[in-house]
Image: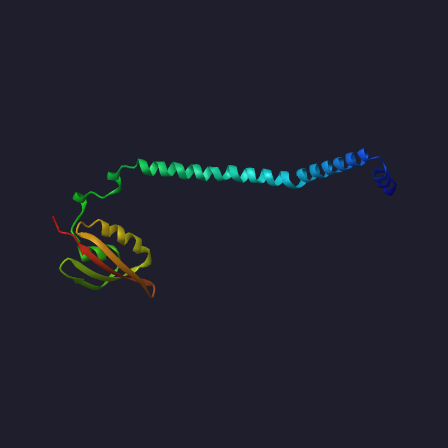
Length: 155
C-alpha cells in the first residue's frame, strides 16, 4: 500500500490530479449513498405526510364557510324567558344566591364539573340574556359558578 501511494505522488502531475479527482468522486458518491440520500428520502416522506392534514384542514375550512348563517344561530322564536329554577334544575346544581336587579342579575350556583359546558349552551337558549360574565372557583368536588347577566328588553 505505501508503494501505491508513493507511485501516485511521485508520478506525473496529470496522474496526481486524476487520482485526487477520482478519490474525491468516490468519497462523494459513498457519502451521498450512505448519509445524504436516506435523509433526503425521509424528508420527502415527511413533506408528503404533512400535505394530508393541510388538505384536510383546508377542506374543513371550506365546509365551515359553506354553512349558512341561519344554521349557526338559534332562532329568537324558539327562545324562552329566563327562569332561575329551570336553569339551576337542569344543571343539577344547588342555588346559592340569586339577586335580580333592574336590567341585570347575579347568580351563584354549585354545579358538578361535567355540567359546566352545558350551562352556557342552556344560557344561550334564553331570549332575555343579552350578555354575561362569569367566575368559576373550586368548592370541594363541585364548582362554584358566579354568573352576572345583563337582560335585554323582553319583546
